[in-house]
Amino acid sequence: MKDKSAIGLIGLATMGANLARNIANKGFSISVFNRTTEKTDKFIKDFGKESGDKLHGSKTLKEFVASLETPRKIILLVKAGKPVDDMITELSPLLDKNDIIIDCGNSHFKDTERRQKELATRNLHFIGCGISGGEEGALHGPSLMPGGDKSAWEKIRPIFEKIAAKDFGGKPCVVHLGDFGSGHFVKMVHNGIEYAIMQLLAESYDILKNLGKFSNPELAKIFSGYNKNPNLKSFLIEITAKIFAKKDPESSKKDAYLIDFIKDSAGQKGTGKWTTEIAHDLGVFIPTINAAVDARIVSGDTKGRQMCKVLKLTPTAKKLTSSGKKNLITQLENALELSIILCYEQGVGLLTQSSKEYNWNLDLAEITRIWQGGCIIRSTYLKNLTIGLGKDKTAATKIFKKITNLFAGPKQKSWRRLLTLSLESAIPIPAFSASLNFYDSYAKAHLPQNLIQAQRDFFGAHGYERTDKKGSFHTEWD
Ligand code: NBP
Image 1 (tube, rainbow, N blue to C red):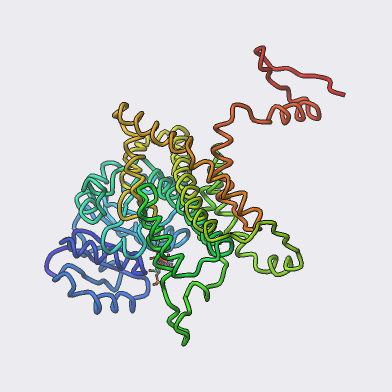
Image 2: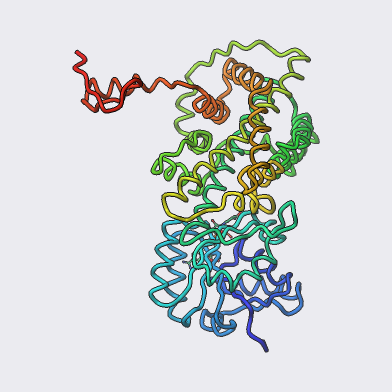
């Protein structure tokens, strides 16, 4: 290797390998290293020639570090948690003042803050950068959510802006979000929203399949139709339609669809759980995200579900007529539209509160803008949200009115009707119910928590506030 590489990357699993190829394909020279050397060798054998001579493999960390331009810029894409700390411990003694480590894994934002502070004591810069888009995004253009050291960001900016996806206006889906763990926090909230939308789509599938009795090819058509609605058009609905059309490659039967052979217990890695934990800590109401995390938990409780097979279900819904089936498709589209809008709303609520709590000064319009391309929750609705959260107050008010009107109209009626029908059919709809509860809780002038306050004062003398006078009051209730 004659010249030193512009950037380095450690961790050649799905994300790292594809991001390294993306960087090289965009014309930047990059050195790569992986703990297991065979993976590096295979990667260089498979893709070393893909972008001319831009990709270089290193067998040792020392060789890797020596191959980089200074200040060195090193992306980590290793498993989140202890592997990130282990890697930093091994790597940092080999680095020089002002070198930059960028953790692009799904790290917890508090770990990112700790790592940035520790490395700063050794004059090393640290950036915690969320990445979304899966393997395809990493290869062709992900949404990147960096937070941390601003001066270090300026040094990696030209590369990151080139490799990122583009928003609807053609700008790169990357921007420096704030200090410390802000980037990883924004990625965590992105994943929370992703959990909620995926759960709403899973419930839609259950309703259409078990209440509407639609076949897989019909489901593919229905979801493709939903994807024409400008408020629903999104990556997740697009792939959902494709999933129902996929034949089972293992089956000899011609009309066997893969979806019917997949176990019904979903996994989770932690970002969803972290989102619910932090929302409770900060006192932010994100019921659809919470419901989605719970739904994955119950789906994974295969033992408990097996034991509960003795429980009897007594659905009361009638079989749908053909016009009932047609109505169901529309009712579901309306319910999905409103419920998904509220998933984004809950995420934005959590970001707003975290920004205040941690002094990040997050630009919400910019966050929703960088989610417009490359990431898993990309959708055309985000265009509205970016305007609604932007600095042009007239445009924001117009969008806000448009969205509020959407909720006030007949779509709300069909949302309620759909939920009733699903409950009467014994179809669990935790995310749909949570979304409607979110709406009703904010829209209602009075909540019944006056009773909770009275109960707390009754048994614990906690006091209560009155609606007609200022101050705290206590009553001897008994
Ligand atoms: P994984 O999360 O599966 O991690 C595998 C990589 O970590 C391999 O390169 C492995 O090296 C390395 N590694 C491990 Br495990 N322990 C290590 C250690 N102690 N020291 C050094 N290297 C170690 O890979 P991934 O799915 O590509 O994800 C990478 C990061 O990106 C994760 O934080 C993930 O949560 C995040 N992310 C993933 C996706 C996705 O769609 N997969 C999307 C967005 C973000 P080895 O080859 O020697 O075992």
